[in-house]
Image 1 (cartoon, rainbow, N blue to C red):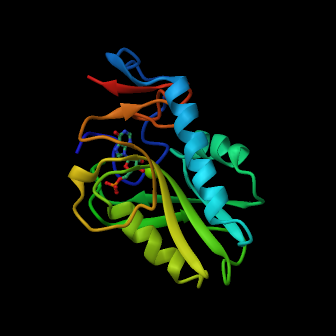
Image 2 (cartoon, rainbow, N blue to C red):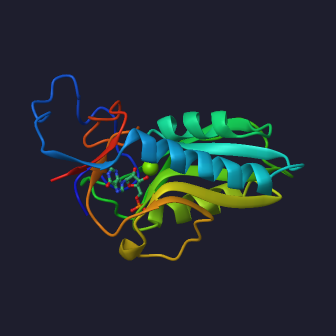
Length: 193
Ligand code: IMP
Ligand code: MG
């Protein structure tokens, strides 16, 4: 797996403001228009499926923050918004399967219809951990919405109920998604070559 992937690590490890690596070759993958259309399509599906439910959207920090902000503004139903942050631990930056909760939800999820909003599902290890963690909060239902699904790279089986884009491989940045804490503010999604 490329550096920076997996549940997000210690934010103090790299400082984007003093990094000299803001010179990667970026290739446009998904334009603003494609992203907006995809987010609107997901919001329509979610709004239809969760009409008359007690929807709590749980965004996974940091990568999903831009996606979540756009998604919830396209919903036509009420939704509570929560965030979690998880991180891999261990010496190297690759997803090693040892994951911990750095920031938990702050309301009771019991009896609620919870939708996890993720940026990318790659090996599936982070999501599997998060599903098990949130299940312990006893929601009525628990589903997953991911902006990008890299299904071919899966190491553990996880169900992704709402998928924005499917992609085979490659490392992407932009629209909230980072490489060593850089590029999150780019409005489009790029492949790092
Ligand atoms: P997983 O546990 O291997 O499924 O890792 C998923 C997490 O790894 C995502 O939520 C991202 O934070 C990160 N990740 C996976 N692929 C990429 C990528 O292409 N660019 C940036 N981050 C990635
Ligand atoms: Mg993530």
